[in-house]
Amino acid sequence: MTLGGWIIMIFSISFVTILFGFSLFLVLTHKKTIEHLHSTLDETPDINENQ
Image 1 (cartoon, rainbow, N blue to C red):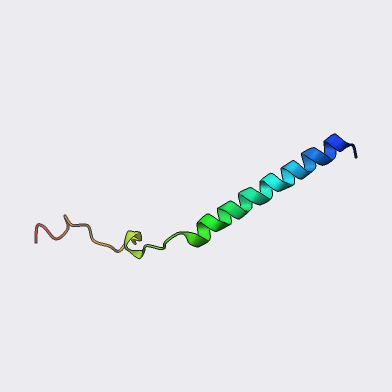
Image 2 (cartoon, one colour):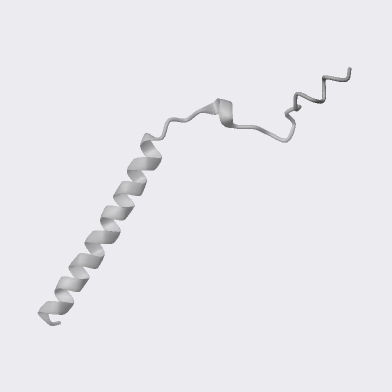
């Protein structure tokens, strides 16, 4: 392989590895907020207004 091929290959592998590491870091350090999770069984506020 030529020198240009090695440079492109090293740049490509480095870029993908850094992108994967950054994505993994964001996922693992994300604060898990349970209050934003909703299910289909939740009642909306307007259901109980007319009772």
